[in-house]
Image (cartoon, rainbow, N blue to C red):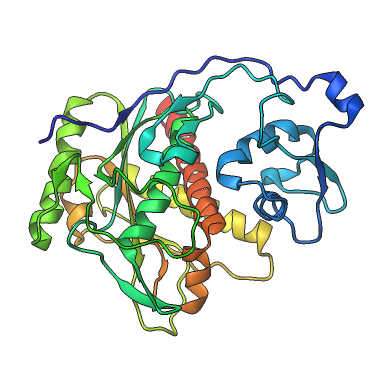
Length: 343
């Protein structure tokens, strides 16, 4: 096993968010009005603000004017984060830098300490010599491993912001989080700095052993594993995000169910006219489900060959939403585990 470990630790120092009164008086803070159908992602993107970088800043600035699940109120005016300087917001800087996320996204804000004392292992499917499912999009080749990796990095960033210790098992040192629709295919991913072997069984064994070794070192801590894939089915088959868990793992079932419940609630809130058909179920025959020690959820985020599912996979704001919703499900799982253990 290589010496490098993507062990991310984050310290939280709680300071007040201050918006200087003279800036309000001078009108220095830019505002935007929420239109029908707007969410935070679309509002920020429409005004040239990256949701990945500034979502948390927006929520902090507008916390008193957001609805349930951080929804926007149509016709309401919202303050936009200052993307050019830090002059408008005096925040005690609690950010930590993680180069693996790339230059634009390396700094991670401290949002809460809800996941203190937890450990998460994140695996994006395939990588290295195996791109996974592939498809042509506008004449270019798109591959499962690139999109699974991007969502995994975004998820890691969310978990870190809540104080978790995160281990990214499959890594690509020169990709980082990418806000493009078409993510360029490469084969330089590694597993904790070790080259990924060509054979499928050897690849799966390499990453399961990496997780299990870390799990044993962290024995006694609250530990969970998330594995992210993109499915490949016929072009006309649209699938919702769905989840697998080990049949004998109560904790794995609760984790998968918590994320599933979060997606169900989000669809009811943001897409009330659309039925969410994603499921969570047992599937112990999968190698990573069967051969890893932590309680885990195996996630399929869509069908790469489906044009409808491609909207979910290719759009960077949708990839960010996927990561955020998964992280909210993880938070729900952790809170419910504490309630369960207290009984």
